Length: 445
Image 1: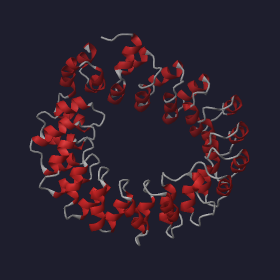
Image 2: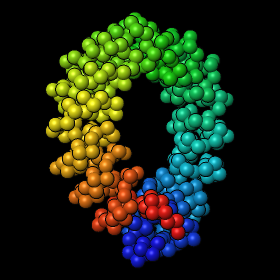
Image 3: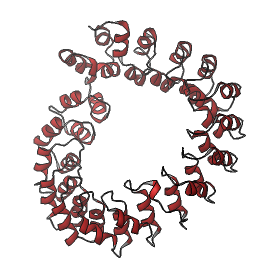
Image 4: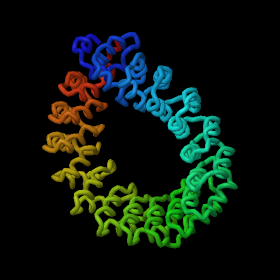
């Protein structure tokens, strides 16, 4: 605290603020909020602590208040204070849509005279069932669509919206998990494909209706049915769908039947093969066949497959395409032989992947930390097993972002952590959280 107050650095003070005892925070607030420019910066910063944003809302002028209501992390207490201070319509609209607005705020704004504010309340995921029911009764199409998509909308409200709504409203009702089975049955048979598509994606739909929609004439409806989280891969039909878009969604499922896996592994669409190549249920024979695919992206997917055997990783580690070798280099289960194979790599993508791999040798990580490419060097800062020698190199890295990323490393030495607290770049000083340094030094004062 003495060093922070002496330095008077608002960015270091902001980084330390959440870790300081409540009684000491006013002293830091005097530094962090010492100018109009700083107050505007903090008011808009999503990383600013909630307590500081609450403090800033007291007596906030119009420019600061507007930034606070637009900041997604501003707490409900600050929003309530700003609302009580005669906020204009634009600010009320932002508060009505705010993810931290509480039930009391939303209930009050549901009675607002401005329809745009009420529409925003209807679109807020935190609006209560009672508020949604009240707003759904208004004769306004946008309000009805927002209410139909509201998470808290109850079955009675959804039924009323279905009965009175247009196709867009009915589509939102059909997608809602609280929608009643009778309405879902009607939605599945609707003439409008949008309504059927929304219905097909609803996890509340029954198995029989979902199976029927898997054979819908519209490919978008079939794709939505395949994406439905309620469907299991072992229930998917083995008959090939004529649409590549639908087959791509098939390929993203787990627990597929062996015959379906084999067919998708030979699919003419490269995206289907890319997705299926990551399926851990593929046999070694299928993986071997796909490891020789002419498309580089498919071979990369094989390299990332957790079931890929060591012999294939060895082969893919020598692939002519660097992106494939980078996929191999990312794996934390690499055999020593493959690690040795990658020891002389020069490609930046492969080196960046190796830099993040905890199994990479310390000497190689040191070399990557000296690489001329700043993005390659930063990969070592993301490696939890990076040696102290590599971390020391990155603490002196000429690129500020690399030093800022390094500041959060779990094994950063106390001396390096303290050095970053005095870095010339504000983003580094903010990231250099003093709490880890205090924990490592054993000082809690």
